[in-house]
Image 1 (cartoon, helix red, strand yellow):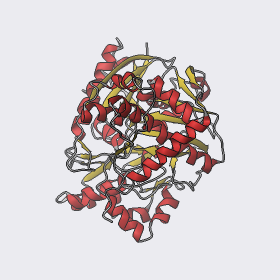
Image 2 (image 1 turned 135 degrees about the vertical axis):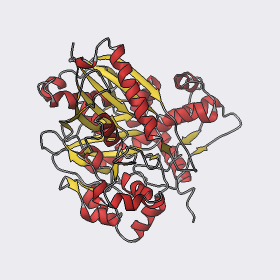
Image 3 (image 1 turned 135 degrees about the horizontal axis):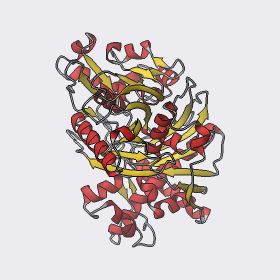
Length: 497
């Protein structure tokens, strides 16, 4: 029995999933890794720990599927996108911890570039806003703050990559230094119109081109695993940043189709076809998965803290022992009791883009309890998604009739129903909610002929449950109005002025 192995390298854990030809999950393995917080607003990962957990779960998933490495037709990789790694080409040793997409240490650098009037240039070429979220300023920080790094980079001795590049480098034994457009388009260095690194942007951030990976297709054999990793050499044939991979896995390949992934953050993407659509409402224009030389684009809204707010309830507040406990705790109260939780722990993403926003709980009274806070935390995920959707509708001129959902928190029925209620549109959950990994598997499988074409895999998508809006629209609008008041209170909290 031949299968596809998807490596799903996320913000808090590394996972591996084995899919068969029907798109069915045969086995899953997952391992969390450390979150490192050197200073407030700074977030790091150990790149070696990412690698060790990822290769470990890959072997575990293959074993759990009851197959061998020779039964794996190809590997697809999907990853947290903007997280930045720099390593020595000769030794493969990282010169610094990975700087995570949530990290805000380069906010002042972005402010300086905005003050110089550079944001319009960056936005026109990359489709992005000037924000610490993206990889380019993180890379610049490493080159400027790690002793000797800039000199080594300029002489070609260092390699930069997002997590896909790092994993492929390690998997291939250092023979392949590549990325795809879906990841490259998140760096502030990639011109989405030309499909290549941009000299003017590199000069703006003082990035030597010698550190950059080669940009390759999202669905193509780019390398094979090095000897000794598995019992056979396996083609590495699919690359997709996590949100673009989920868009592909949800089969949102027709302009106007939208998906939202409820992971550590929440990420909503609308497929816009073969031409980029420039946002007027602070959304991102990004490359979707590029297949067969045909560029595809999407509009994206990025919510930094989605499911991570539930982890905070568990690890920070300690009011739940496991993430699964949040739903019954939230359901223990009839409503939020006027409590709103704004989870801007690492700033606010779309459509606010405020790196100085911070988390806040508002509306507390003597009668507020753990249930109200849990409910407010869950509801915050839906409110943030609603903010993004309204901006997306304004940009596209399309009023959505349904939202396809995936990710871990999409399994929470209470959250999905509330999401449908505040949006006023149907929320559709597929039978397979692991659509990020599935998208990576599809990209890899198409490259090696495991699946014949897009039509074959489109036939595999099936609805598991459809949540229809049931809340009175006046109540939904009142809740959203109070949410927006709460967001305004949290904005610019950490700003110097």
